[in-house]
Structure formats: structure tokens, C-alpha cells
Length: 238
Image 1: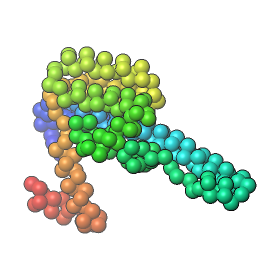
Image 2: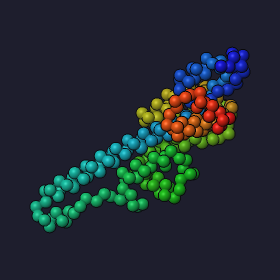
Image 3: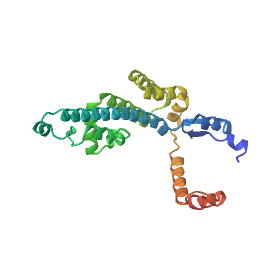
Image 4: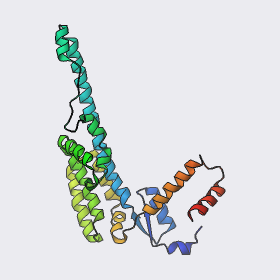
């Protein structure tokens, strides 16, 4: 354990948005400036957009199931074999890229989690159809990308605070439950989120190392001897 004197020398700590984690940091490193990792903040917004996509996915699946039921009923009520043949088999409507709307909505998760500048041609086509059918999803995605752009911009705390306030107002006007939860997080952690723009520190390296530890542990199918496991980690990654 670090002695109190050394813990007082820690200047900054970057954490996720866990209240328990932040409380621990404040107790253990009382002199440190607390920073909320930008990628965890952005992830909240991405998850809100994806929840909106999922909501639309259920709607289009319900609409498709209803269309199938109506087609079957129509065929059942046909008075002759010729009429049944004329009605034919049910065929889903296909968009210009050859996919059905449920397929497009289902396959768009990775599109809305990416910045538009990183889309390939297939994703651009799919996104164009998706956002044409669901303009509210486009609006939600645009708000998510605006947040990413604010974090990417090399601005100081004062400018960032102003940009985030404008963004906050836009999200508030959007007024969707999933996004309102994001706003609650910003209200509760505004200071620690703004602190990122002073130091521009993230816990990306810690997250990467944590992923390596998890991968190594999974190869061992669990850890029986913790001390030996820590020894092996030190030999591998020290």
C-alpha cells in the first residue's frame, strides 16, 4: 500500500462514471484532480442512440409480422386456386441496396457507433436508407457525433464548457428518454467531465492493459493461485 504522503503527491486520476469508483479515488487520493474518461462519456451517448435504433427495430419487425399475417389471411380468404396463385407467396419489400428494412435496422448497430468519416461504401448506403426512413435516428446520431467532435477539438475548459452547454440544450430539445439519462449524467458530473479539457488524459492505456489481463486469464481458464498469476503478469508485462 502507498503511504499517505505518496498518495498526496498524485495529481490526477482518470476514471469511468462509477460513483463508487470516484468516491474511492477521492478518499485514497484526496489531493488529486478527478477526470471522467471521455470514452466512457461518449459511450453513454452511443448507447442512447443504439437504444433508439432498437426501438425502431421492434417497430419494423412488428410491421413486418403484421404484413405477413394480413397476407396469409388474404390468401386464406381467396375463393379459388387461381386467386391464391395470383396472391402468391409473401415477399418482403426490399430497399435499393437489396436488403429489407428489418435487415437494415438490425445491421446498422456498428454504423451508428462509428463516426461517419469511418464508414465504408456499403455502410454509407445503408446509413442513407436508415436515416431517410427514421429521421429522428439521424438527429440522435448527429447529436452523438457533435459530442465526439467537441471532445476531439483542441479547446480549453472555458470554450469546451460553452460548446457542451449548447450541445446540452440541443439534446434537451430532442427530448427522448434515453438521451435524458445522458443529460442527468452530465449534470451530476459536469466538473469532472470538464476537467478532461484541462489535462486531456484518458484511461485508454489502463483499459488496454485490463483487456490483456482478461484475455490472459481466459486462456488459463480461471486463476487458482493468485500469487503465481500476479508473478506471471509481472514477468509478461512489467
